[in-house]
Length: 217
Image 1 (tube, rainbow, N blue to C red):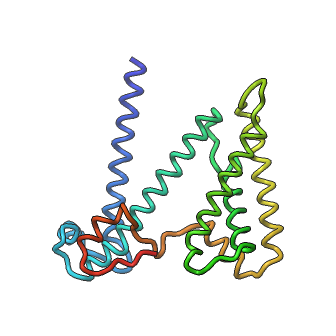
Image 2: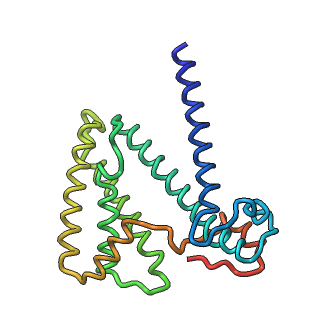
């Protein structure tokens, strides 16, 4: 009986959270500096809207809503995986130093590795991914023991050490460079969805139905 009640509770929670996400998406489609009437959202999505309504929904609102949803799901998935591996409900990429490793990778790439303007948009995310991946490998190597395997407590403590060490390296690296470069790194690490657009394959259907080209940043 307890197991069935727990499953029912989880299902109700899932339905409630899904409904809340859907409600948030609907509200986000109409709110903004260029508002769109909620009565015009469905006709515009079906292709019967005016140019301004199509531009606001397809070029501004929908791409960023999709990106925010994907980012939120990725963060939730990464946190769930780390909590399962460490058997600790408080574990997350920030505690284990993976975020700090990604930030250090971005700082090193931006300050020390020259990149062409066209490739810059790809180099920075790739540097963050490589930094996070190398941090995860080092974290596993320092936490693993042949006798006891991967101990959750050792993993958490090692991750905290990596996080503090990388944070110190970030301060050391950024203290000797131009303030504008430090500001760019800080803004990039904080993250935003300004100027983002849909890319293939997510935006393929939307781009195929549009006569004008979609600006993808």
